[in-house]
Image (tube, rainbow, N blue to C red):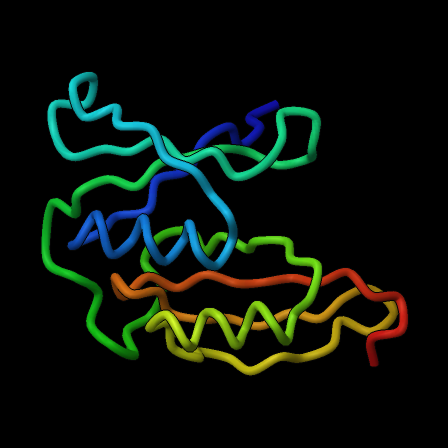
Length: 131
């Protein structure tokens, strides 16, 4: 089976992106630029025993996505414990709302945002009471 094992988020401003993802989600970063031959920071997104994967921030190699354009790649969704406080932090740190919070009935709250680098991502808070 082809299980997803790593992700890369393309960024224009590495420090701005590290600050955004570090502050909003608590991710930590390790400089792997020497291995990649370009600005590239490995991202640890949680404890090794937790469900999920790690990835990286890498220097964008072309133009940034145009606002409002269709997604051209994968949209990653990040699990959160408190949807509303995470959304507030995303917006405070320069993220933008793409698709407002909505219920996945009996399962979770979901919504989509644009990060400081123009990339689309989702947040997901499990909640069996969501309607």
